[in-house]
Image (cartoon, rainbow, N blue to C red; front, side, top):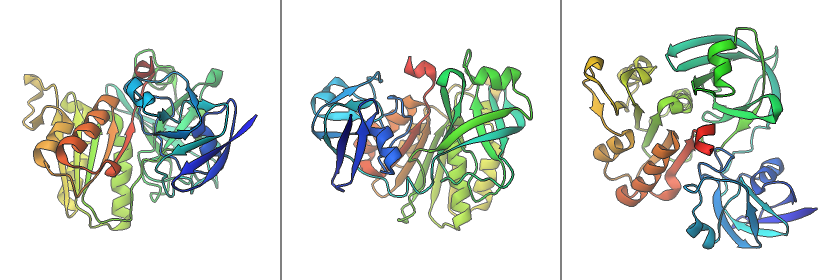
Length: 340
């Protein structure tokens, strides 16, 4: 059966199949609902059910609490329905400008830039290009229908192969392959682009970029896009890792800070040891932003990385630093361990 979903306040409508999630139906119909992980862990797709009822597939409690459910909120990435619905959601302009495609790619190179981080370069077929927005991601199509998501680490304006930053996860279906068996010229299939994490260009507000670990990948693409635009907006990049070696492209960030007007870079390490000889900032990276910028009321924040970092930043920046809730844009990197 097919049901009709109406989005408020836009009035947009789309069809949803009985076995389909509301978000999947919206993406298929070209309706720009906000989303990130698509698997019930990050909370980016949270909205309100105005009329009708939904059933939720498995999801993280932190992404949708029982109290929020009781108040009518839903995670549209894991919500299905058996009747027509009216939902309330803030739509994202431009999120469906580029069609989702399935494409083959060839591994051009694998570079180990840290003991647990590899940069993969993918060559697309001749005369083919993937149109996407800086900050979006692709999903690798693996065996048994499984998928793994990774953000493009370069801006689309930089014509050339796609680059991805892959962190090793012990026992990971895809990362074990990357670090142990993958070789140049291997063929990988993917689908994309996905996600609503990209630069909002209709404002001149100062930007805070917050990254933890390989959450730096889409943030790097955002910086390259800002450079491409010739943007004069002030930018503060905060990149956090457990140890200095986790900041695997620190030299590039320092180069940006030295050459780009209005660009500031603050590396933060949470677990420095004496042998690291670290003399920079320590502690939690999201807290470093709050220390330096206690009033975020006039800023935009783009946060990417571990769910615990993203959620702490979202909550505390809004509650304590006066950041408007609709000026926080995020992409939480969820692993299978996070979903377990």
